[in-house]
Image 1 (cartoon, rainbow, N blue to C red):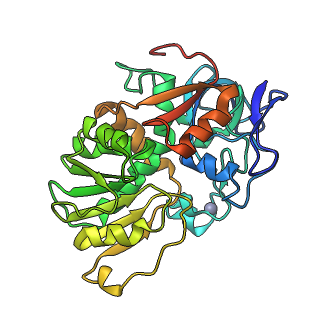
Image 2 (image 1 turned 135 degrees about the vertical axis):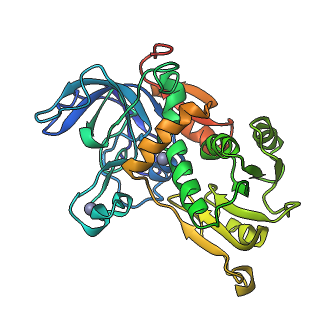
Image 3 (image 1 turned 30 degrees about the vertical axis):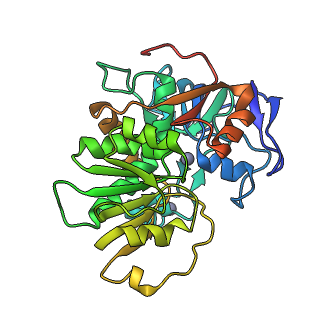
Length: 346
Ligand SMILES: [Zn+2]
Ligand SMILES: [Zn+2]
């Protein structure tokens, strides 16, 4: 099968012809239709995350169809459309897992990091961690494979960040929420937050007029350069950009009792800041990975919004170009590798 493989972090992926893997007990073999590209893939390829399995097939926003099942798999069935997310499996036995916090499990394995992912024609997944993706409009699922792919990490991590941020605030009909970095995750969360009645304020790289216009086109109430003071204090801010310097900036933009959530897996160092910026019960937190509950909730919610993802497609063999374009911010929304031409509405 065709695949793009990371041999050495810091080096481009190399095309390879690998044997199609055989599903083991509890696993499904998925024929990949599309695989979204996430900033985390960039951190893996650039060597900013320390524990990749090498050689590695990256990619953890996989949309495809079950091609074969290993022993003991009841669901999903062969032919069913599924999504394979970042969380590839957890130990199921530790305290975190027992409390429904499998995203924190120390024995968890991650797709496209410790286990081969979706930058390939086929991909294995633990059947219990693959999400069913029902058919498009009418069937309650996302429209096409390309559009669905960014939901699986950009959408999910944004949703988890959003859910945990709201949980830290008093219940309120409408909040002013700042999104720092308006890429794949923010462009999805902007739609979800607006649907819930909140006002979204996009903060973009100074001078990035294209990102600002994109945010406004998705219904953001304002789009400002990252350091700017919003015209009203924010109730909460979610930082998607991997830039630690945004933490004190966001803390200064939120009202008393406000929450700042860091949603990325990797961030540059956070500069020191005066305690006054945190004072008055402002909260600073991170959000890590996802749970299956997040996936079930979000994938049910997305078609109801409905979330429309903006995708830039690349053929599988051009994965390096897609990663470079993400690094340089050359597109709006999300990049998706087209592995198998998807059937519209399938
Ligand atoms: Zn565990
Ligand atoms: Zn991701």
